[in-house]
Image (cartoon, rainbow, N blue to C red; front, side):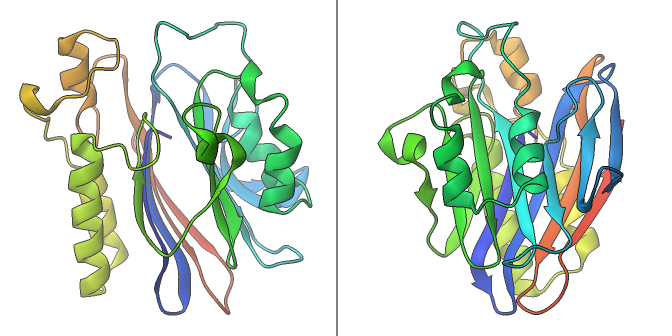
Length: 245
């Protein structure tokens, strides 16, 4: 997952609404969102190479449905090819019985083995952001207050052009009570940012341009799926996915 915007405790009756794009190499095998045979309560897409996931929900849990999403943090100079797959962080939380704070405490000592990541996880009562990069709030797990948030391949709410643009559009759609199709239209935006607004993440300006779009289209890498998730106060969670590549 390389872009996620979400509203936490903003819309009455729907504690969490999230819209996200997963960007990945086209030749990395994956399966579309569905129930996992070995964990029927888990409903998520699956990375068939690493075995984990980038985003998913549980249908039911002791505290209601659970949610988890992951984005990678761009850091080409510190990337380690031998690091474990970050998708396991989503899969293990959804498949297990731990609350978000318990899960964060359990992975804190081993999080440094992974390449950089953001993890958003919780249920209809609480939501947390955790990262193995950044300051103490990130590394200890930050309980999120009501609001609208965005993450791409930097830390939470880093002011990248695609994050700022999508958060503003997302907020407008929420205010309008827009249909689900409007969120997928937002996620399909292929507009690239101007060079003056691009972040400097250690890659070439040409690649920064290509990756600045909400929906990425390049010959070998791009947006593979778009997803909209809703957690309700008194109804089962919903996850709707559109497979692009």
